[in-house]
Length: 260
Image (cartoon, rainbow, N blue to C red):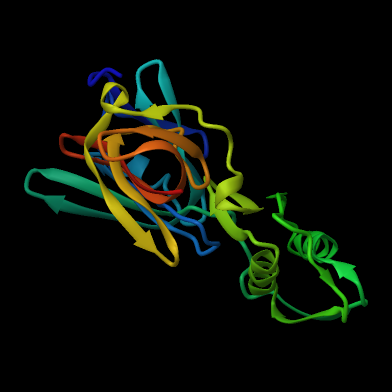
């Protein structure tokens, strides 16, 4: 992978800005739960008219990568915009929530019949939220005594997903009820030749173990993706648990935790 040709492109309500014309920095986290991640994008020396285009709740998409190979690393909604002076520069910071606008306060009191399948409840709750999600259950639990939802629908979905051996999470603005280990087949290999930086470090969290890895920014990396790691201390197939894409100064990297 070339070290040159770094590129970022911002699309917001018909407005397109790119790093060839403007200085852009960003910090874009991703993980495996449904709580929205707050990403931060900094753009230098915008005109006032352009700044005013970045309104709260407007959809924003951030593409990044290298010339000829860029892709979506963030799709979400603006939560806050702030502009301040830093020396001679005018810096606009845009905070973006990486989530569809879920109504997390929407509640339900409903009892489902005996011997109902988890998939049936999930589909019903998704329809109530008017949320289109990719569903891939490790097991489709049967509730022999029925099931009662009494409270927030998002919380109920998360609990049922756990019962089925998976998690309810958002990735690039899309909803998933799926397992970390059900990700796509490996699309790329992380090695020194393909952008691996430094030596992977051992990672352990919530019963999961694997490695913390840094590589040149790779827009294809997202939660639950399968990757092949080739290094002196680890060699094999892993799954992305969480991480972040970051461009700050000379650093244009993806930091990720991968698990067996």
